[in-house]
Length: 350
Image (cartoon, rainbow, N blue to C red):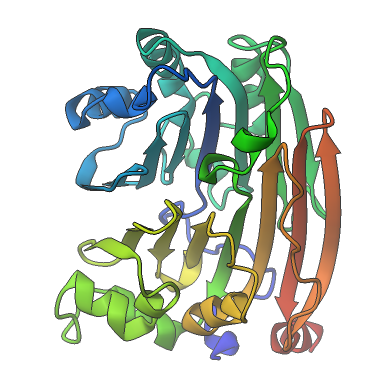
């Protein structure tokens, strides 16, 4: 890895301009209506675009199967299950502005928000963000004005200058408990995120529309993402001049994975997220890391009503800088592991 070319000494972006890769993320669970198998999936692409207008992003393409609908966005991704929605947006999007309409959509589908999780990594360019995303305090205040006051948390070894994770959890006081059948459904399957930065320049050259670019599908295959879960249907897009997104969904069990890449050296970032039941097994974390070659990364595991995934605390070639396992309000499990490359650590020490 060419860390000497890639990483400024203080580990911060050195240029005033750059794309904000780290996503704002909403994971929203709805009360199941046993008389309605479609739930939120009854909303069509046009209706979801109307909701996304408030977040300042656009649907690029869509795929579906019997379990869920998947949308690749101009800024990240949207996944819609009957009674769960996952929405990730990057850049200077205004993600939280979509919540009013999302609540209205739920009402029109005879359901209501049961649990809500908002989370994000620290921004690279916080001064470029737009209200309510200027800072976590503003985001929490905005959320508390809509929902019963939730639980905000900042997790990491240094929430001033280093990498850290922010998370807000709230639930409807009438949520009740999750029955055993429901807790084993794909909608309640734990989620794993790998949030990577300080990426290898050579690896990132695959995510430009340069002389090596053929098409987006070829990129997915070439870099190895098609091999993570070979049975999944992928839907990908390469931006101009650079940047890449892919959503993948499984016809077998309804799981997904999604990847977003910001390849520019001064703000390089890539995220991988999945709710596949077997992701932690068989060295798949290492396979993702091999594709992107990060200098530092976080592994985040989260679940509601189930035990969280067993996040590895040791990965060859990296030092574990921080580890936390939390349970909020007795139902929401959230774990965080921060890693630095051993080579990166030696460069900084020198």
